[in-house]
Image 1 (cartoon, rainbow, N blue to C red):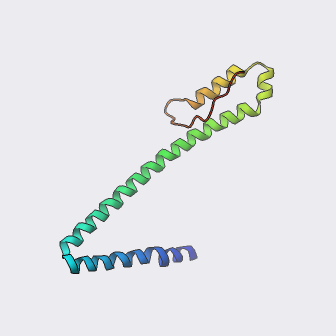
Image 2: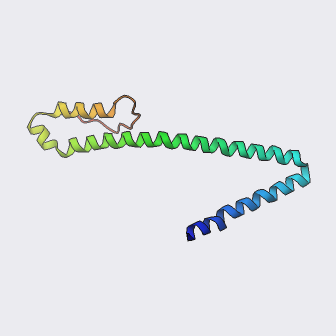
Image 3: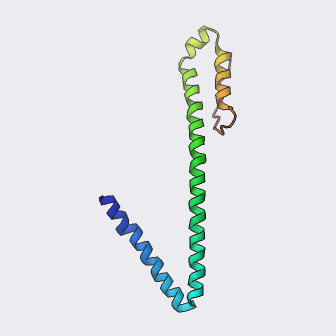
Length: 117
């Protein structure tokens, strides 16, 4: 509750006061048409900004999910490396990691590859 009050008092309220005072000055100096033009530009700018922000958040979430799946596979293969090498399953584990790193529809970061030698 205190954080909400703090944000309102020191972030939201000064912004509103600044926007209202700038609208009054624009109307006084240049007339209502200039104020309308600036207000319309600000509204379009914020609308496009929020739209892009939501799209980017969805893309980032899918990228992070793919990265975590790839990292999990790499960690699982690396931790069990002694067992994998004793049973001769290095090509199999390398292929599992490669499939996870390059699975279709996942734009993920491929930070490295496991070598068979």
